Length: 448
Image 1: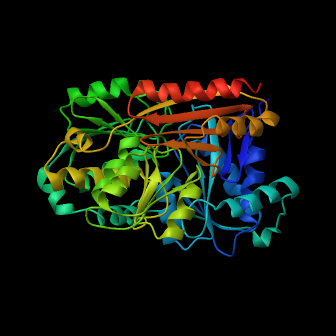
Image 2: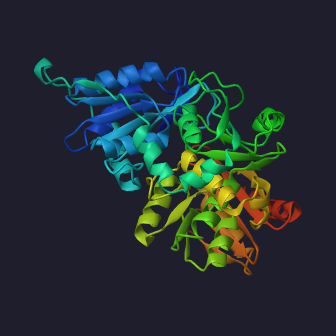
């Protein structure tokens, strides 16, 4: 058997191999044991193994004396809204995000509707590693309450941050690719509420993906062709749990995930001035836009929980991650593809411009990624050597090693699950970005 990925942010593995029903049950109980009084909201993203895991987790939580609000299939950001709306003690989303179909996992939510902080996640991890399940007598078994309406609260929050009537006047034709994940449940309703004519691909949350689930350029070639064939003005492409959004323009050209956050930030800062937060692996497009609008910009360590922590600390008006995950505090402190769709349409309608015209106003850079196999015990020395090799760069150890030069940067981080380091660079041209990663590889390999 392979090893599951267990961390402060949750659990992920291959079902029937590294992720077993027993493991999911024990991890869920370790989470529930640390919660205050109140029900736990349980949901899933539509994967074929989600119902099985939901059955196991629901039964275990009830057997431990807690009640469950069962939302069945909903998007991850919707779960955050439901936890707040029902004043629940916490929430569990059964999802493996963008991983292949054989994977599933658990994302854990705090009572305020955000993913757990690193500190709270460490406490769950400790209970999981040290504790054993504690069952209650039959008189104290928890109850199960179905959640009859899972989308209205989230819909209202999203539409409140845009000019609903202005968007409706344009009557946009859009294509939504939910790829048989959870996204179309709210996605179709939201887009129709915004006055759009909607073509939906993969509306049914069966988990039988039409294409690989990560919304990357190579995985969305056929979707781009369908956007163009449908004469849609934009293609919205979600990952299975709908916390990430990639964009395709009317010509069928893949715009990508990094531009999702950048377009949202550029639009929001025209009316809401204040700090912006992204993680340290996100494109500098957003940093440039913050400077253009004259607002403070901050970087966090990689990970949604870290972004949210810094957003709260700095009073950010917007934030997110460059993987297509915008976070609007007025909706919730969760990456949210629905926020992304609504704000992109709001930006288009406010400027009377197409998606490609919005993109043309955004600073553009090239990103390159690579990885190097490196024994874990050699990583610290290798990063020190890399820092020493670049005395002309600003050095940041917030998360791995980040080196910044004017107009370009390099980030090198150790994997949490493999004996490798990952390098990501950004520069004005693809050649310059590739050269930065190659330079890093040469130094890192010299320390093997």
